[in-house]
Image (cartoon, rainbow over all chains, first blue to last red; front, side, top):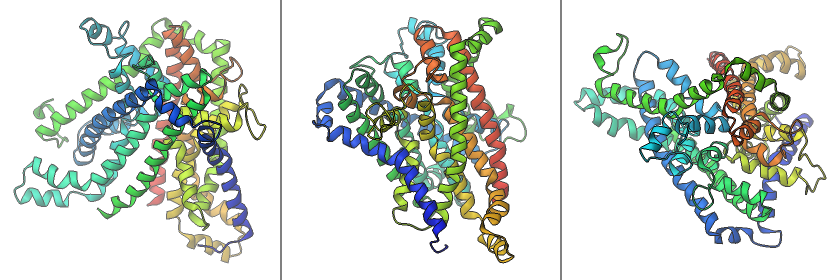
Length: 269
Length: 271
């Protein structure tokens, strides 16, 4: 570590000013717009049943995404790290696809597959009385899609690092495959899973584009928190838009803080 | 999938094959099939329609704006991202943890809220008197915000691993700070910077939420390509929406490919 030189003061100054103008000040403005422009818009927003509903829809859908992606992420993580099979590299590369696709394209893709009118699988499903798109399951599909690889990516490096010594030892002592999984493998990746779950939750709660297309955004039914922000903003209820925005920002910052706390735990395990 | 039908170099046990089969089926139904259908839908009405969509004046302008904004933001990120990583790794100052938090906020903040937040400082009611609403700069600003962490977070680990001995050796042999940075540090960081830039560009091209509120979406002026897909969808023009979507998908896939190659280089360098 070098001592502070004039050059380092300039560097730090540039970085701090840049981050303040791009992130810090704008984030501060949300707090200001929510609480210090005449009304307490947060209380007002939370008293509105349609907004409370939007918050619940968001949380419920994010919860489903966490369950699906944790099961998939842990399963696929173990398969990719512990086994050899043809197409492994391709599968690993494809698993990253969901985070690289534009959210609006995700919405379009789900619409084409599961839309009730023209959807390849959606139309027959609709005839059988199952509607996915423009209802809650559609929102679940969308947020599960966009947050798909986050648990997987958190789990893989830890699985690689812990190696197979303990697993092999347990097996040689007569433990069954299921016992090894439950008693050795899963406990040793629990912090990585927790880390991935927090990221998944944050991503799923904050999804907008994909949900916008597949949910229909029906107030009191399929409206999520982000869609409500857009509706409020367009309806010139700016204060309440900022209030819900503030709540979402709070979730994001909380997620980041938790993730920072979880990070060192991985190394201790 | 039965274990006996697998190729010889597979080490899957029977329960593992079942787990793999179910995972791949779920992944295909959720991700692969829907994305494949986007490609199918874009091709349904033939090449002329596909090409006609992409060359439609308003769409072509939207694509051009999105690519320019993503490229410009990426260029800024390559410089400022490297600088931020450098400051975080090499300099000591109070409030460093807050800086760390600020850098990751764009990762976690819903992009729609990012647009709203930027609008409060750079919109019509700006306390700075800067209003980007309805100008092309709004797309640039939105992309700049959401892509902030990428270069920082790819360069940082490489910089931590980088041995300062070589730099000290170069300096003790009479090289100036600038020369040392240019000839010793920068070559070691280049693969990481490039990898971060790729991620930043791919993310920037696909950004939707942050544009929604911040840009005003004026056709031919401040309308980005993902917003164009949305307006095609709203008018039930699925084929046109799919055509622009396929274009964005191709950009994302190319970026993944490039990133894969570059991250291999980074890993090799770290070894």
